Image (cartoon, rainbow, N blue to C red; front, side):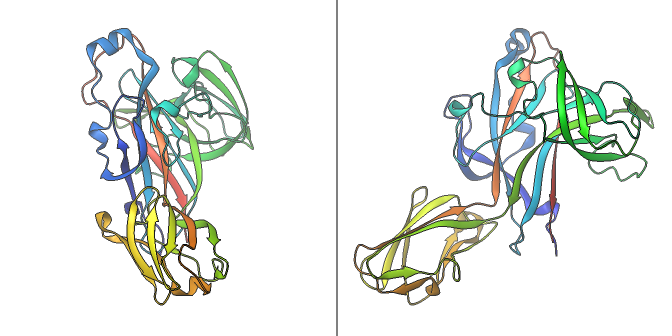
Length: 345
């Protein structure tokens, strides 16, 4: 079996607003792309909204039920807004908020091929649009990954509509146009645009975020006991791609066998015993949060002893920035497309 596109979900953070507290930890509420950003008002279009832009946060969650790992995960914007605004994305953390966003966040976006390119070329020109310098695709640098495509959309399976991935060697800018030197050369030739049965499709170049492998996990084990031990390498805490919540867990013993379970984020999670496996459920998702195996424990524990470990959800956080240059026109049914790449068994 493998990880399917249906195994991926987007979830909103704990807080959604235009305030500095916008963002935070992952919630159990799936996003609605149509209402992810509110409508841009007349005053926002007239005066512009790009310094700062409007921010929204989403968690991209891998919920494969077989516990598979999504390897080499990549995320980006396949097609920018059809209106006059621009979309940029940057990786966030499990709990950061809008007020934490600073110059260290690296923004990715998609641009249009600025001049035709031929198979064998080792550089391309890409126009990313006129937005404030702070959001001029700062993730586009040596070592970054880009996606060059002439496909109409992600589901376009016409083999003549080519696409390819490349690593970036270097970048230079003139205004909003980046000259991108590639590691290697183009496999295919690209015009700046194509006519597909009356529909104009531009050749697009997406700068990709690379969060890495995406899976649930437990780590950073610690034990505070004079005689109790744990076997975290041979009998680790078991996690679940769908149900495991990002948290720091502490087990506090009341005697040699029994312990209370508490999370920094989730609070009290009940009690367990070293004599049997303890399953903690995520009722909101009807899934297992984590399992503490009885075989984890060794030696002799006593009242007040503790065992702690960190849980990591099978998700990564993405900040979205909507940038609206001053004077853009109203756009009914505005839209954009995101893309996700992964490998699995």
